[in-house]
Length: 451
Ligand code: 5AD
Ligand code: SF4
Picture 1 (cartoon, rainbow, N blue to C red):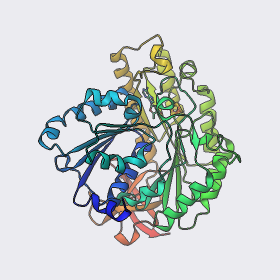
Picture 2: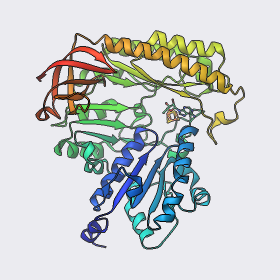
Picture 3: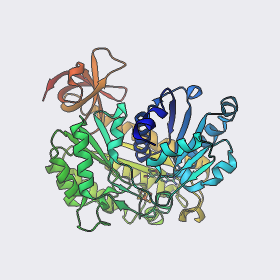
Picture 4: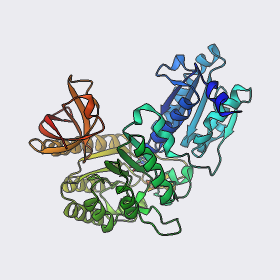
């Protein structure tokens, strides 16, 4: 089939994509949306209207998986009314469940795995030609070029760039190494090519993505470290900002902290999941650091990069977590003073080591601890945000503020949202904003000056 005829194939049709889970999934969905757009499809928010309905799924916690199953089962009547509707499920649940998904929901047309994102259009075409169900879950796959992501509108200024896939860490609660496979870093030249090309199309901020970016390059010949990769990307002209996520405390190095200090484009924000403040629980989680080591690393980071914003992930109710372990987590949270935290209830995942650990924590106790820690962290987050009132912040203007007329919103280098007076000509540029106050988790700025 020629490129042109393929482009016409989707003309007049529309696709609806629902994304669950992490930024890697958001990134992959951006690529899928871009591929459909290239084929002539429109994206639609109205699921009833769509010709193709796709789910990009997550199995890190049971909750997202349950939501997926309930959303999919609701589609059955729609599929009966619209027999030509194509329903596809991709991502981590697809990778793990394979044909079990179509066994359970026979109206699903296509199941595509985490390594098959680049193939999604040809899979949909095969369904259109009458082949169904299709289960396409390769163990390996050509990682789709992150350049494709830029073809979707929302990602005009900012782009996700995956620098590696998979993970070798086997934290005892986590399903990622089983569904995403071992760590595979992309060669630095390829990443540089992606980022240069994005910058030439007007992208000014990239977020480098990987499950554990601190071990970037260890699986490549040539020994380029993550700090070196940042150094290379810092030189890309047109680019203003580089962010990255996620970091693992065991691998975070002084060299990386110094790179964050010295490289002007690398933003002062580190997402460093601690998971627990109890060294005993951390050991059971197979995290390979103690609570003290974690605190020392954050202290060192703040010394090297003053004012850096630090966020984290915490799991509540891991098997064996006692009142005392929880108190140690609370106390670490108080000591470290995170700018923000994602606090999750532990969810037992099939196939992980922790699935069979003893000491299951009662749901009521988990709920109580979860609520207490959320509230405690919220008070810290708001205090840290309010401490920025009166300061001048370098903000990247991203879009119009839909809740406040005559204003734009953007993010500080520390990844906080700011709203400030401005016009469309500033979008995509950095401006200096004087922060007057905080309202609903937003820094409200008085004036904005060009930088
Ligand atoms: N239960 C609860 N939270 C989990 N996470 C990963 N696996 C689980 C699980 N089984 C959380 C961790 C990780 C984040 C992406 O999701 O905190 O950092
Ligand atoms: Fe999961 Fe641990 Fe790998 Fe993160 S580092 S993806 S929590 S196994």
